[in-house]
Image (cartoon, rainbow, N blue to C red):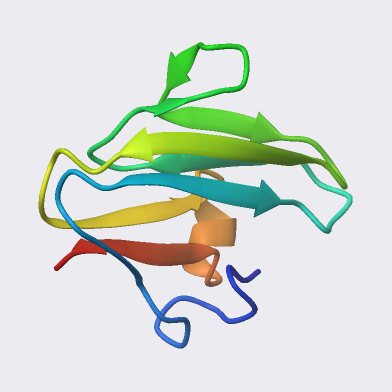
Amino acid sequence: WTINGAPYGKNKPIEVRQGQRLRLDVGNHSMMTHPVHIHGHTFAMASGLRKDTVLIPPMGAASLQLEAVNPGAWMVHCHNTYHAEAGMMIGLHYR
């Protein structure tokens, strides 16, 4: 399980600046559902709903809009613990 083509620790953290608006395009290229969770933030869905976790269906995708308003070193990961432990995580860091 990977994010941006590599498991956690071998992938490059997402670097943001405080106040930056960003869009995370999340694609699921597997036949399993992945609940993607962002620590320390909420994000807006296309429908306008705000969440901190979203289910990405098999072979599905979602665009997550968030504003970097909570500085720190955070994680983005699959909320299935065994997927996260296998490497499906990435850092979200403020410069």
